[in-house]
Length: 118
Ligand SMILES: [Zn+2]
View 1 (tube, rainbow, N blue to C red):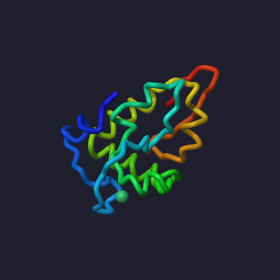
View 2: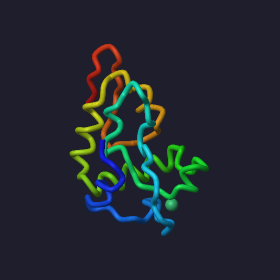
View 3: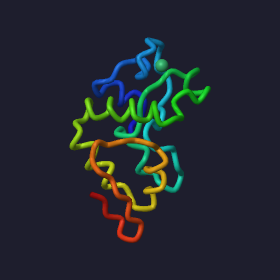
View 4: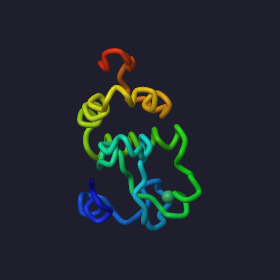
């Protein structure tokens, strides 16, 4: 799992990624939540660096911010990479993906029996 320092060294800065210009101090699971059973969500695609106070006050726990962070990650890693990552997640996360409210820009169907998405 990428540490805060590793993420900063990888093309990120010490400023909160929401654009508030405050210092970033926390790793935030920006797209899908931190779930113990799914350690693959602890990856740089899913993590944004944010201000501690905003993080603590759950400012980013809504679909609007998840969408903004999705767009930021697409700009950072490339849209195709992000969609490939999203589609590679286990089918058991399909409910979470739907609940996230994120529009990846592709038509999404969540087929729980097969785990295939198009
Ligand atoms: Zn912020």
